[in-house]
Length: 72
Image (tube, rainbow, N blue to C red; front, side, top):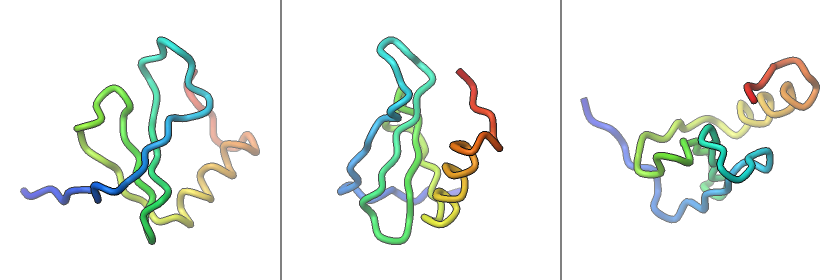
């Protein structure tokens, strides 16, 4: 099984809901055309989930509307 490398020029941003000392954070890369990267902030060299921008917008809209519950 081969894994694709996410572009090195990705600019990762940590979730605005992450606090200091929180070990369950995600980072997103929004600067790569046509794809949103999502990764575990504790394991930045680990796997990256790549999703379509439209799917990312739909997910975050549902979270903001309270349709999807997040873990705290």
